[in-house]
Length: 187
Image (cartoon, rainbow, N blue to C red; front, top):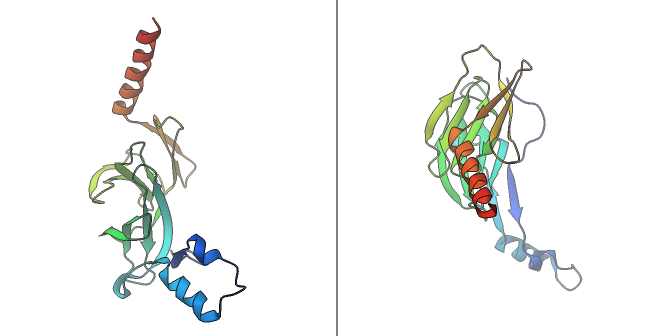
């Protein structure tokens, strides 16, 4: 199944000089300024695909993109970039199309969900698969993932209308310890 529509294939990062009024500069000067700006292309010729998802890691100021090739030999890739567009890591993730991509509270875990109905946990730095969550039921694709504001709960929305609410005991324990420290200080 291929998504229809337009996809982002590249973007450019502009600095303040690039946004200067065109008044005194000729066309050649504008091109030169544009070439100094940072830029991003979604992949090498052998693995180009449509950019499907972007997840921002606010802790490390990096972002991860998921691209999906089209056609009979479709492959999916995750790519981790610095905020200025430098490729830091690239990993092939099979042929599954992801519909959800989100970082955990400390930026060390990248959660993804897609067509297989599983939630995959990957090390944010290496993109290595750490764990796969499957609740045992026969659900269709994971369509969205979102954390509660305090990151205690991960909400997973499935194509069949199911909502799965997950919690990480370590996160809950950490939040409890913080609350107990506050009570001790006040008491």
